[in-house]
Image (cartoon, rainbow, N blue to C red; front, side, top):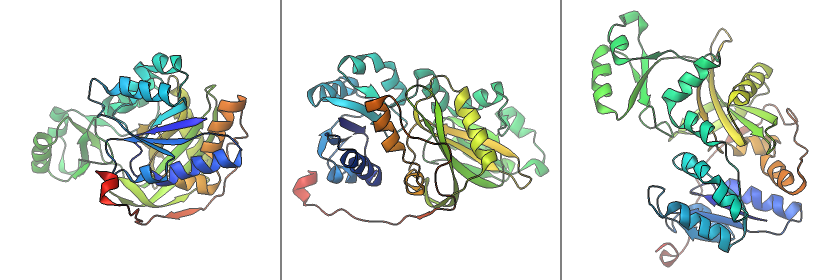
Length: 324
């Protein structure tokens, strides 16, 4: 089984683990990494590396289809947000060349890609979330209602997320940011929950990861916490999505009074996902088992509470000719 990771980037640990699972299950296949250029670190742990155009290119989908056909790709997953809706639109074309997409439905991806749509989804499904303000509403807030939060509604990796403390800051950042969205500021402990949904649409596992430290929009220190309240609430969120599949990343804040507020959904492997693997929630193994056998040995809470991940910088050293 050949597995293609689109926009592989820095996801070295994830690719290595999929390679390990193929070997342990005695499944023949290649781990294939695709990215814009040869400087992607994940290229150098993959069995094969492929260059693709940007997802804005008219050749993007056809290039991926040609690669999937040429290299007999059995499973394709993307590790960025920007092409998920596009890939979902072309699901039938990939299946026609024998490639399964580890991907939520087009409808789910549209909900997750636009934070305004995500907030509407939360409200429509009675899921607790921060209040969203129009600029007119925000301008009428009193001093005691600050701070508030502003962020791009189509943003990613925490880029542009800004805590607003005064009306002057509101005006500046509302005009400075592209596609701004204004929300209630919620204080508390932030969790990312990795939820595994098998190819039959069954929710099989949920691992809350409490963020201890974040760098560049990705968790650099975190701990797996077996919090039944968070696990159940995150599963309820994913169950409300139309056509969820694979690893769905749900983010929430647990307030000091124990109340949860959900803030975001990313329908893909998150940057901090290796913590869930190390805790014992082996999503890659379950995915491959599902593909081969139509079932897996996934269990909801069969993973180690209190597992801590402390990430650090590493390096892959190659010749300049390898990346040019």
